[in-house]
Image 1 (cartoon, each protein chain N blue to C red):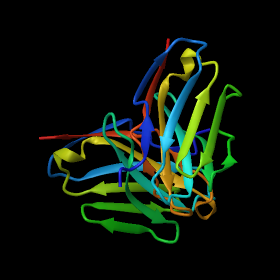
Image 2: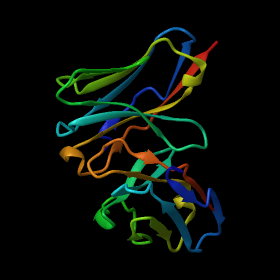
Image 3: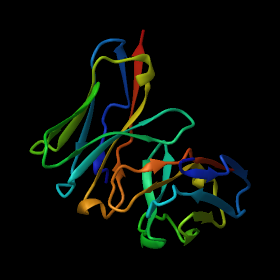
Length: 113
Length: 113
């Protein structure tokens, strides 16, 4: 199994541009989570899906952030427009439904200049 | 409001000795606790977990202790090895796993030869 695959690994973009982060969960995992890691706030849960349905998006910081899961093997996190304070490492994780030990991807390091 | 707190940003331990990482939580609804390990440029990886109905769980060199009355858990690593140098995150959740994990900010463990 290739694990949770995130792309790109690094993204540098200018303020105001749209950014799309991608995630492929492990096959058979029903739950998918998006986290953001910053020095100040640590690992924050942004949103999670069960069976492709968004369950809790209360961690999404602003309307500029949106996430979709069109099918069981793909999810996106979009920031539009991006701002310098969005610079962080964004992690995607997946797990079988009800299993609390998530498998994380390697993350996308986003830098907004 | 930080519901999971790791008050030591870093910890230095000599190789072969015991490493003790601490974690405190405030939410009495948490019923499951986990430790994750993270190397640079990688995602967190699951290490060990404990249910709130137990007070100890052991896996090889790693033991997690839970003190519910004090809302405190700790991770013991014995003996410490150079490969244990990493950032360790404490995490917790509620609701039988129906919601996402809440993470602490992490403790950077450095094993010195």
